[in-house]
Length: 239
Figure 1 (tube, rainbow, N blue to C red):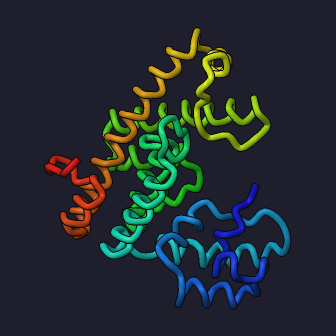
Figure 2: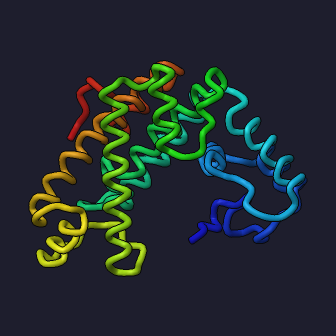
């Protein structure tokens, strides 16, 4: 599946834009989320020279300059809105501590530090995680928790979708279905799977909040923005 809303101008634009029109959009009307959308972008078919031309632009646009405080604040607000809409209990991708928390931890650090560490431009999440660790931007514990958590959650998502042949992203409520999913994951029963899921997502969420908070303070996002989104590590926030 391809999310066509990620193209320039979103769902209101033609499905395919001329090269110059796309570049004009990114240079004058894009939002910080467009950088996230292009982190994994690559040429897959067509004119090779055009692909190389866009790849040169992509690297410059996404990684050419460090993440600005206003850009990170915008992305954090977008993440918070997504969570309020989709972070239901048992959500594997969009839930708290789910797949998106791993990806956003990685991508925020890529946008912030790739100008200084060229190997952070890696497209895939696991390679980027390793490179962040190698460059000292993630501790050993953070790296291992995110790597293993991401692998577990991705496999869990795949098993969900294989079982139903649908883009399922939440754990089943039915006990028999949950037990079946657990066996697909190599676990003896659904309650063991739930315990593992809660352990992984709790750890991932703690790392996401800590990294987002530290990065925001490092580049100058105000504490009030962090408190409003409950990601100010170590600060008292209202329940």
